[in-house]
Length: 331
Image (cartoon, rainbow, N blue to C red; front, side, top):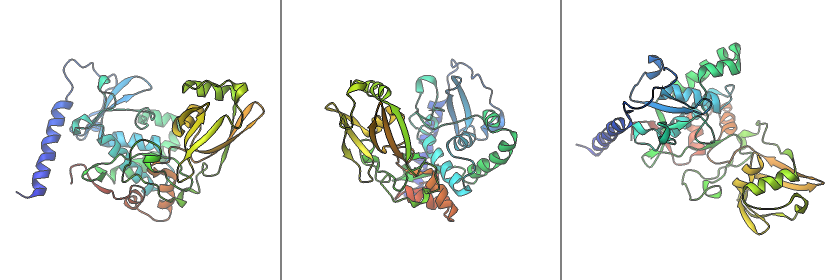
């Protein structure tokens, strides 16, 4: 038996073991939303989603779940190849979480593989909610595009070294994506900084002015364990101590306390760590470029590449260097 066949047999055995572990016990409370049989086209590739809006756990066919993610995470008016790239990214993230595939679930205590809360996993919205949110006409125009993008990439995920990637993404990098090592801890070979001239059409590429009262800045710093009265905040109070090669803030020092750039940005509710600021009267005035952590696929960049005729595979290969696309059970 060849090496390929041995590996495939091992994958199938692991899958079967994952199915066994993933089966709900008879004591599990019934789901509050009844899922139609058509939503479980492949009962083995199902995913349990914790819908944060209601606290329900909803069981879905993987591909149906991906449609709700793409519709929630990327503007439906983006180019078809960008939507396909998002579908592959969303599916890859899901596969890494699915118990039935031996993944690590986000909310095992709730019996869920993933959460619909974007702060935990990736956003997901039920179709009936999307229909209400978009309106009947927009839903009629948008949903077929989403379905087509997911169906035309059915079962495709992003791989590196024979395993599913950590396929993180963001809205707008504003010129360069960021290396994972400059945002989080540890280096990831396929999450390196790349030049991205493709997101110039994003509304977040140009600097945005954000004015925050010093009292709010003081409270935000307090949430990070750093006490600074609003009256003591000056242009020198918050000092940048480290920046990444792309110019994003990695660390700031406040009253001798070091704060990671990502934590600083999130505490203040800013869109990016590509920022600068000044103190004017009782306010801090920030200039912010981009949207998101900057690592992995730039969504507006993906749309820009698609507009230039690039395929979803070319888009993914550009932002995740050294990766390949493959079916879930392929090498």
